[in-house]
Length: 178
Image (cartoon, rainbow, N blue to C red; front, side, top):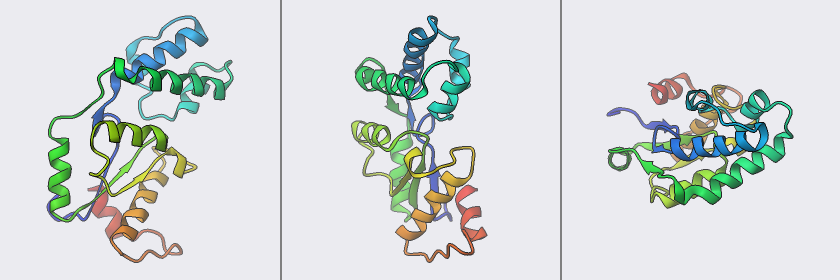
């Protein structure tokens, strides 16, 4: 990271371990809408997908918005029951990167509300400079729109010019993604 100016992270599974609350939320959702739980491996295979895509694929006959609301409500009301924690060394890494003058970004499939809720609870809300959540983009990971949106915000944060007509300069994209 020594010569990198822009550093982008994901949240779930990279900065913080949210696996247990995600698995529990899915299991409760599957129990309610399918009448049974799912193997944990199948749930883990969905990590990184946006909710509506997973619901459409795994619970195709259910009303998507209702299922999304149920899943999010379950997660919000059961956060205290499942340990969510910052991975060892991450807080120190972010602090060191900031000391070196790096601009730290996060691109996540979470909603802004959910992301900032966890960041504040974990005491990490002051350690990132720019964030793009699922609320900020129309195409979600693995589509590059999330990364591009974070890079544009980070360039603006650094006062680096961005010309929307020519896109993100290759040297910026390459530096951020290496």
